[in-house]
Image (cartoon, rainbow, N blue to C red; front, side, top):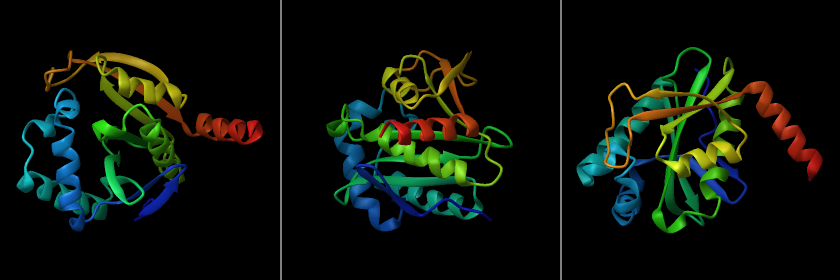
Length: 192
């Protein structure tokens, strides 16, 4: 089975595959960011060591099966968030998910991490598109998609309705095709 890199640098941040030794750092990042995460992340409503350990176990299992490739976002070795490439939107597609510590927002770190993640996704054979899905009320997630040049293609009712206090129940779907990503990267190199 083909996999993305287990660790890589994306401009100012490093991404690496989650490991069980991240338990304390991940638990701390979540705990310190609850006010920031609870409105958007269903898993943040019930934080705790057992749930965090279960996530790390599941992340390892899903990596091995190729279902999800979950990464710690680190800055100077400190865990500051997480992001994933997920095979849940059909053949040829990968969905990206992401979050960051509340003390690290507004610095472009998530955008930098997601750019690296998208690049890894398009290196996998058969990937023709990468998507970002978020609730319409989550403007920060939409800003990441917009900054990276994703195209908004649809707004649809969330199948399960709102799952968190901040959600409206309307999902925004953004798409980046492999051709768009290559053109964007070529344009970025020419501008440098």
